[in-house]
Amino acid sequence: MSQFEHTPRECTKTFLENALEVLGVESELAYLLETPHRTVEVELPLRRDNGDLAVYHGFRVQHDDSRGPFKGGLRYHPHLNADHAQGLASLMTWKTALMGVPMGGAKGGINCDPNELSIGELERLTKQFATRIAAIIGPAQDIPAPDVATSGREMAWIYDLYTQLNGHHPDVVTGKPLELGGSEGRVEATGYGVAWITEAACKARDITMDSARIAIQGFGNVGSHAARYLAERGARIVAVSDVGGGLYNSQGLDIDVLLDEVENNDGKSLSVSEIQGSGDAIDNQELLSLDVDVLIPAALGAAINRDNVDNINADMVVEAANLPVTCDADASLRERGVMVIPDILANAGGVVVSYLEWVQNRQGQHWPEDSVNQTLTRHLDAAWRAIRQRTSEEDFRLAAYSVAAERVIQTKTLRGFLL
Ligand code: NAD
Image (cartoon, rainbow, N blue to C red; front, top):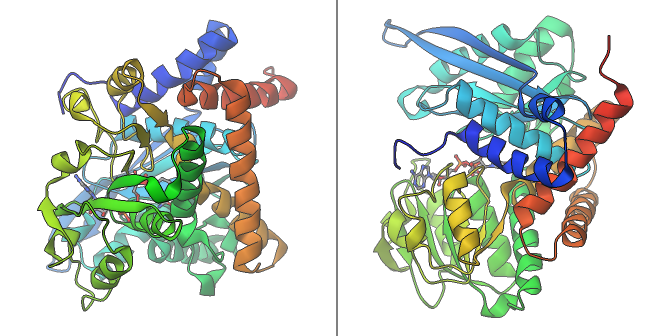
């Protein structure tokens, strides 16, 4: 990616400003809406298994809590920094508002490569991080969840540490294992939402599911579940990839076989590109340039950027990852008439079920999966209809940010600004 491209925070700011301009929001309020409420950076010393001392940095950005407690994931990635977390935290504010979830926006994580750490090291590092942010998180204050390279395992460690300090509080994190108060359907929720919204967007463009040809970058939690749900609805998933490369089959890949091979590899991580006999090997840039109906970037941010946007041949891009299309590339796709379904809508299934997990924990209940999925579908449907009512020009990002910003402005105004 070009080094002069905009940063994640600048991109979220651009998307928000476009909406605030249409809504005619005054500049002081616009500044307040863009700026994070609080950015915390903590130093994290870790005694490695071999006795060496390593020092990492942890971040928690709390962007806005006018609609409810801060909510957002924790990612473990070597490139995580304050700007990145600020951009992603802001995204969460607009996502929760758009989905009608009474929560705000946050994001954070640790700038580590988890592949280089043992499980013991990861637990010590996670608990060190939890200790240092314990004062600013809490069930009514800020509720973390999994994101890239974190899962129920890390949430269980944070829950344990927080509970030791404050008493039993399963509602301090979501995305927990079922045994610790996790919700049915949470692991699959983001992929479920991606598939639901993709189908709705295809209908709006008169593309039937059984004629849709879809390529998905990223075969982790979000990408693999989205692939499975879309294949179940009849779509042809012609390509998938992960960090190790991808596979292409013009007749459609057998997603169940791929999932089986990736999951049952004696616990070792296997790239989809290593699975023999399913399709032809392609690299990630080739996948992004395929001539398909729908391209779903479900890996990391800035996958589609200024350098490769001219190679995109899809009719529609569904943002399953957060900020996978930079603001520079977004403008170019819009000019070319490519429909972009924004992240704050496409991947919001996860935060909706996180909210439902928090509700269940606070009520001491455990709901069956069909109740969870019915409620999730209601939230997706309501957000989709709110956006469709807003836009006739198919600028879904502008419409989504406008709906979300209006809701946040409403609560801020009702609560007032003066002390
Ligand atoms: P994950 O760690 O489970 O999977 C990430 C996938 O991306 C893996 O297949 C990995 O190999 C692949 N990948 C990593 N770097 C890559 C690269 N440079 N090129 C190609 N592929 C690469 O993460 P996830 O939970 O599936 O999250 C994926 C995206 O979805 C992230 O942007 C995350 O913020 C977003 N998201 C996740 C959730 C959730 O509930 N997990 C919710 C909303 C948004």
